[in-house]
Length: 310
Image (tube, rainbow, N blue to C red; front, side, top):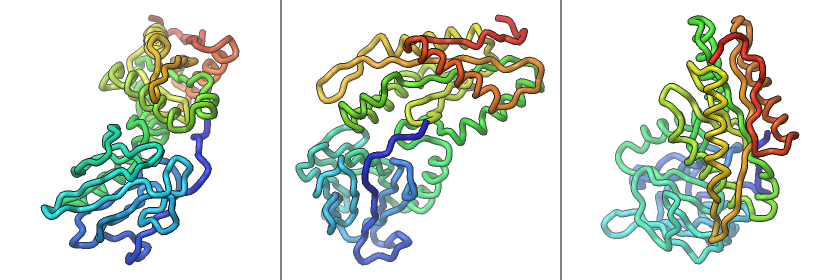
């Protein structure tokens, strides 16, 4: 499923700089765009001449032309002691540092800054260049919004673990799940609420994932769990636990509580050693949509266990 996109674009506008976004040697700080996906993902904006205004206004230093961003949303400055500070400028949707909404805060190296539905990583200090390249690498394997693995890394991991399972004759199960009625959440409560649901769901599921397994954001509101050394019965048990984890506790956004459910498909790797990663994913996806058609908020396993047993 495609990731949702809000109307508007993100434009980097940095007065006094070239288009490369190179760091000013005296600035020693920058913002890296880590969400939303798009052509500017990973773009670096140096902060050489604070104060630095972020907003939707055309003359903003960092121009973000998205509906969730106020015209003059926030300002980044540096005090006499060299500390970096961000201050909200009375924005509608607030300024968040590490997911805490704050009127102002001092920034530390590695902090996440959220402006509307746009998320940046703040980097500062002597090793900014190395930290930048490390962050770019992390973005190739992780989803910027939820922090879990992205689809690209999911496919690499699945192909590797599938080959190992076929070589050693061990079971492997794939669990795919999708948030039910996610479009109405975005349409009725807004994309910021939708993003919060994706992050909260990920935070609930992540602790249930074993070190040898993988949890990934497969699409916009679709997630995947690769369970190594796990036959169908274990995959179904895990899937049902995740379904209850989401359905049994309400989600909250801006003081309102609402329920969220998921539909889940489970497939087990064929024992004959001929199945590809795409084949296994397709079988799990087929069962996910069978769960949708059957009324949602349920787990549907592929009945073919191919002899792995319990």
